[in-house]
Structures are given as structure tokens and as C-alpha cells.
Length: 301
Image (tube, rainbow, N blue to C red):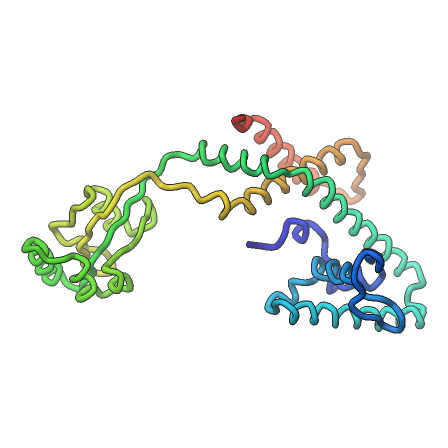
């Protein structure tokens, strides 16, 4: 569905290959199968997993062995170029040390998120949050309807007369309707308020299941004859289809909670007044959001 929360949070530097190039996140070769060697240096399955998490999105159009091969090829290039960089003593100097220190902090930031944030959100919490949101959602009615769309009022009136004489709505829709739903007998599926143009929606919601409109309904698209098939309360999304999104929200909240606690306990001084003002504003928004969240009722047991 989306970029992972961890990738969203971790600041990207350069092409993202540098982490593996400097060996910040190198996996022990003994812990995984060796996939290749480059001048005697092993590249393991663990290295490939790290490469996948760091820049696998660049190969998102590849699958299976094609994807693995592309990632392994990138790791081989990293080993070759990083070795040459060492020979040229590019790993020396203050600028490189600063960059290396930053990348180490970045890796630790990622490790903290994986261990403290991600692992803190359990499946039970995800399910409880889903149940709470479903229970709190306002009741919304929706209807399932069919329609026949024609260009003129006269055509619509002739079809209504045909229906009154026992004509089959679906068959007529397939034969005479001019929109894309014609092939399905004019079936528009279920929809709720706000999803259709106002004139169509007003007429459809005023009807009972089994009824069809006895007068043509005019909209910007032409003239409609509407038949309502069913009315029901809108169904919530199935848990399995939204659980990843629910989890992402909980992980985000946990991250904010951890960062807020650390910020509050730390001595942070921003030297530039303009930057301090902006950061202070961000912190006020964060605190306001946290207070609103604290006022929410706890999930039912």
C-alpha cells in the first residue's frame, strides 16, 4: 500500500547506497548463505535483505530472481567502488568522518524504530483500534441502484412506458442505455450520499427497493430511469483489507510518543531565531495533537 513507515521516517541521503557501501549495516556472513564474493569479500543473504530494505523500491518493477539479481548486482558494484575509494583514501578526512557519523546515527535511528516502535504495536492493539473506529463511525446509509441513461426526455418516457408494460429493466438497459454500466444491466453497485450528482442522488434515495422512477431524472449527462435494488447501512471495510493502514497509524502514534518524551527530557537549543520559531510551532502542534488523543475514550475491552 504504500511506503513502509520506516522508510518514511528515515532521512534518505544520496542514492541510499552509502549505508551498505560504508558497511554500517553489514550482516555477519555466518548468519546467512554466501551469495557471491568480490575479491574475497563475501556478500550474504543478510546483506541482500539490508539492500532490499534500503533501496529495493528502485527495483520495484522486478520480481523474484530478477529482483534479487538486480540487488545483488548493485551490492557487487558497491563492493568494487568502495574498495577503490579506500585505495584512494577517500575514507579519510573530516567530511567523511562527519558523514560516517551521520550514517551511523541514521542506522541507530532505524534500529530504534524497528525494536522499540514497530515491535511495540501488537496485533491485538491493531484489532482493538479497528473495532473502536468501526464502533465510533457514524451510521451511513447506502443504496444499490441500476439506471438507464438516454439522450432525450422522449426516449426516457418511452422506456418508462415499456417498463410499465412489463419490460425487463436489465435487458432494456443492455439494449438502450448509453453509459458504461449498460453491459451490466445498468448496475451501479452500492453508493452513499455524495458519490453521485445531486439530481440523481436525490431521486434514488427517495425511492424504495424494487421501485423505478416514473418520471425521467435529468442530469448533466442526460435523462435517467433509476431502479433501486437495495438499501442498507454502509458496511465497514473488512479488517484484513485495512489492518496494515491501521497498524501504520498506531506505529506513527508510538513514534511520536517516543520522540516527544525524549524531546521533553532533552536540552535542545536552536541557535537561529527563524528556525527556532518554526520548530517551536511544530512542537505546539505536536502537543496539541497529543492532548486531543489523550482525551479520546479508551478502546473497549
